[in-house]
Amino acid sequence: MSLTEIHNEIEQTSERRTELWHVLSQGHDQTAAAELKRLSARLEALWDQERSLKAALRFGDRDRIVARAPVEERLVRAA
Image (cartoon, rainbow, N blue to C red):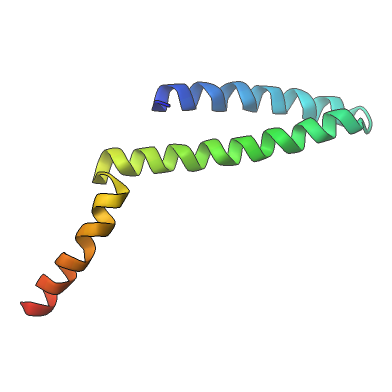
């Protein structure tokens, strides 16, 4: 998923969540409350995905960074 796709989904999910908050402000609705909980979890996952993707774009693949770390640590100790 691209950053643009993530941002679009965040925007749509946030708008729906706002609608649900409005529904719940009128009185408790178990269905709306359950959907709100699900959407909040989805938003949290999307923000995590966005942060991970931005880090990968900026610093490179996580697995290569982790694999490179012991080599760089040895170089620092040897210097």
